[in-house]
Every structure is written in C-alpha cells, then in structure tokens.
Length: 274
Ligand code: SIN
Image 1 (cartoon, rainbow, N blue to C red):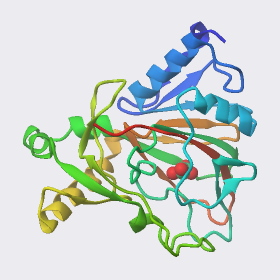
Image 2 (cartoon, rainbow, N blue to C red):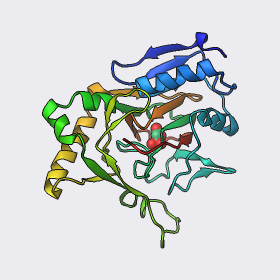
Image 3 (cartoon, protein in one colour):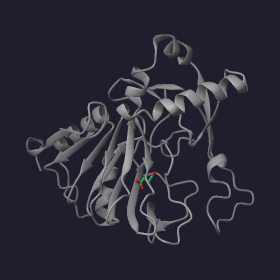
Image 4 (cartoon, rainbow, N blue to C red):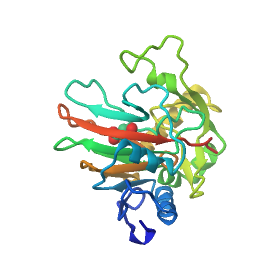
C-alpha cells in the first residue's frame, strides 16, 4: 500500500492522531513505513481502526520499527508468542495492566521505543486509554524549572512495581530491572525534548535530597495529568493504538468492571534515553 493513501487526522493539539488508509496486516512498503514512523514521532500515539491481525501479522508490523521486547515480569503471554502480552480483565480481576500513568517498562536500561496494542474484546462502554504528551509536558514547564531539571537523572525501579504483583510468579532470587535515566530526554526522531519521569516507575531524582526529590516528582506527576496535554481513545474491536514510549505516557481506564476487555500487546525494544 502506498503512502499516498494515508490520511492523518490529529485528535487534539498536543497528542494523538488517527490514521486511515493503512492495512496493518499487509506488508508495508517503505514510503508507508516512513509516513507512519514520522506520524508516531510527531503525534506521540497513532490509532488505526478496523484492523484484523493474526499474532504473526501484529509482530511483523511491530518488527518494522525494531526488535521485539520480552517483558521482564508480566506472566500473561499469548501461547506460542512470548513477545505478545495478553491484556485482560473480567469480573474476577483484582487489577489491570497499566491503570496508572506510565511509560512502559521505563525501569529497563533501554526502555521500549513503543507499543502496539490490538484490541480484540471491548466492554459495552468504558475501557478507554488516556495518553499525555511528554513533549507538551516539557514545553509547558517554566523556564526556571526546565533549567533546574536539565542534566538531572532519576531512578526507575522495576522491583517497586513488579515484586508481589503477579500471583503464582516465582520471585525468589529474581532480579528486577532498575535504571537511571535523564529527567528530560531528547526524542531521537523528532529532536524534541520530553519529560521522562512517571509515577509508576520513577522513585527518586538522584541529584536532590529525598524531601526535595519527593516534592519535585510530586509536582511533575501532577503536571503529567494536566488534561490539556492529553487525548483519550475509545476502543472498538479491531482498533490498534501504537504509542511512542519516548514521547507519551498512558493510563488504562478500568471503569468497566465487571465487563471484559482483552487486547494483545507487542512491545518494541528501544535504546538508552539521552
Ligand atoms: C498497557 O499499559 O499496556 C495497557 C494499556 C491498556 O490496556 O489500555
């Protein structure tokens, strides 16, 4: 399919675009790949509707952007496809994946570039996903705050998030990823600066005293929740969201209990934030 057929419709001024005219199940030519790649970097998250994907097709699409990531802790993987996580909730669920603001697996030394979530079952209402632009989060900080944060680094701790989270997982001797990343990172494709701390994984700004770090992180976590930075996606069966973990955070809304929701998630490996 040629890129000439692609339509890109922005959802909000800062975050998200819906893409039409692309069949993700088909082999993607280079101009289409280039257009999708640029749209991802520009809008932070892109959405496709009415897709039908086998696990192989979903993986093939994701692999155009990089090698696939294997999650360090999540136990619910699609049989025969360890690169695909089953995101599932029903009336028996105690929690759902991603129900707080985060960038996926930011505790990894090389956190994921992006994530492709394909929805196969949706509740009658609810189960939206919220996204927030970390470009806009950075841009809307005051100049003195930008100067303070420039050059600082923060700890992202996987143990803090994953230990004890998943029933039946053997944890004895398990080492969870923990990494130090810049608080402000530069996106390798867009060249834009983005805030890179999140309330799920980030525990401490290294250069500050603990009480200073707690206060600044608390302020930044609230800033990330600013509605003007966000878009909100209403899923249908066959919808695909592809988010750029370097430029957005997301939050899965678990407001559909006791209804069911099921999606298949392929995650793409990234590189060291700079
Ligand atoms: C996730 O964080 O991977 C889950 C997102 C969602 O279910 O909307």
